[in-house]
Length: 243
Image (cartoon, rainbow, N blue to C red; front, side, top):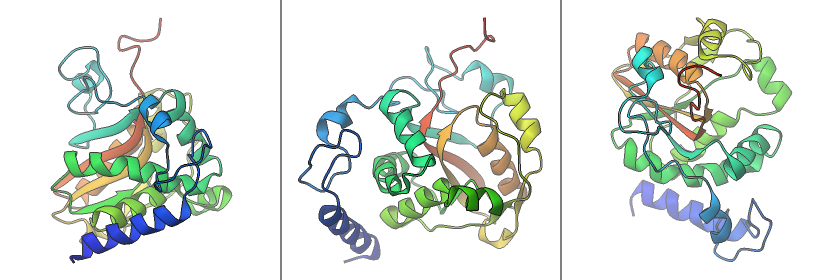
């Protein structure tokens, strides 16, 4: 048995032995799944028409208006779900203390990782400052990346740091977020990224400013190509500006 098959078998055994209820509705489950079939069927999958660059849902085929104006530094971004309904609530719960949900989210992301990024050499994450991580107790993006690495066999790397605190980005536009994040990430381990195809893992892609800033830093450090994979993405509902 190869190492990847061994790790997957071990993870499946863990899942089967340690999960007894659906992480959404709380109903009892019997096959080790993290989300029951009924709740899984209602999740808002991002499987319709998407922008080929940022991966967000669009209304017609082709590159979205925002990417035409200013594409992300990552070559391609993809998300498993729309940031709506129960998928959005899972992300909020995960970020607000329900740390155990990293397995649930990673299990949902694994098929997308394998389908969209077969050439990935390494998985990384969006770093937090030490102060911010202490306050939350964990970095949710790192947990996702580590679990995906264990499930996929793609190596996990942590080459970058966040050098300073940034103000809350919840209500900022992409331009404001880019200004807020400018030069905030620094790649300390350049050897870990040189010549590699790297996938940045995060919980949500909103405007894309965060993964774009980190992607730019990784490319300047020598990465051959950088991609982004998130659990959800926010559809740009006002491509011509808010009314």
